[in-house]
Image (cartoon, rainbow, N blue to C red):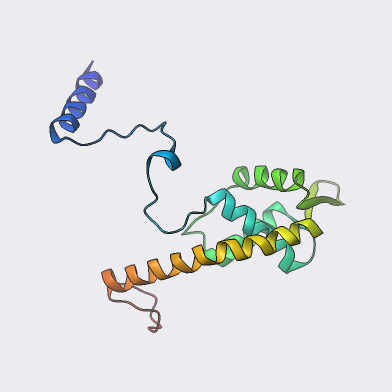
Length: 159
């Protein structure tokens, strides 16, 4: 009973302040604009990055290796996608013939980029480049404005 009273109280507070209630089930893209300049979802980025890693390594890799490349590049403190995030993306890339399964070891699925995947990567590189550059500029300006730190400084600790 207490939780009901508490939720009613919070609801009334929102109504009293004239704040808009946020429906957690809303369609994000349809109702709100994004705060940051990057208009790339994490799954789109992970698909793009997976194609990039497979092309750059130029050899078949298994899922854990792809995640390791991502964590080495970005750092696990920033974003650490799980196997449960990556494997559906690998399945989708495989279904779209952008990558293929190659069986090297009995208990591991290895993935290699296809020629179609290389073509898709080139298209995505051109498509995502302006978004990535704008995001870089946005966050660089934000860090400089808030913390007084700019990219010319070698000290990466921001106080």
